Length: 181
Image (cartoon, rainbow, N blue to C red; front, side, top):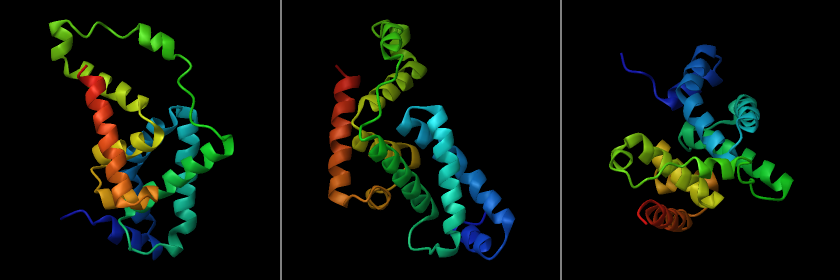
């Protein structure tokens, strides 16, 4: 038996099926939490946002319509919650407090073992993504981790398709430069 899609689960939940919500939550909690941690760069803040986003989903369920994919709607709520937070602080997220310590611990990438290490490559990619400006980092994460289309990313971020495409292109150029010096 195939697993019901998000829209079917959402309709069932709106109709009162609590198990449908449990399945939606189980399906999307990991990707949502990772997105919030990557965007906020602070686990405690991500925990708060995570709870807040799901509370907003619960509160808005009666008004949900299947105009966009559930994941797009969910990540749009998360995007808006992050924007509200940064706006209230009137600044971008600060660099990690242990940034200098992290930089000092970066191993020499020129050894053959390190060059071949898939783990090290992922770490380098993660660092490079963290260094991107917020708007570029967000579109890269949505594209690479959620495999969303430019249109879906635009729906989440509120940016037009061409803006998303431009942010993604600039981000990818910066990543290439950072990873292939």
